[in-house]
Image 1: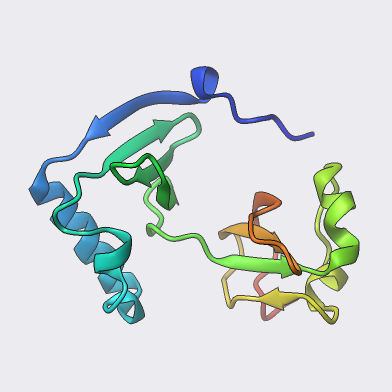
Image 2: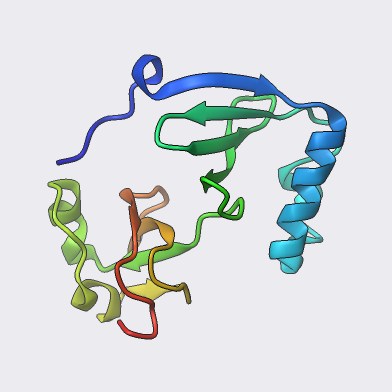
Length: 144
């Protein structure tokens, strides 16, 4: 069900951005998420030259000069990836390709970030540091 990310197949190009474009991206991020104001210099320093990695299916990833992913967007969505967290019991099922259902997000150990329907989100797991998957919500968190 899931296709492993393969750099040779999945990336269509890498763009080194001019400083004016970098400034524009930084301002869009701050406009969407003003609470990042004090942290943005740490995540995307003004003196650091970052790049946009263009992937298939209209996905863009901002990477810093060390090659670390900082932000992500799909089509013209904002540069950010909201997080949803499932409980420990869902980990093996999600990794096996199962859809995530409302009980996995509303049970103890799970956490939800307020998002509307059809939002791209990172699926995290209770007690883990890295995302299990990236998916699209079919319901808003209010409906869940």
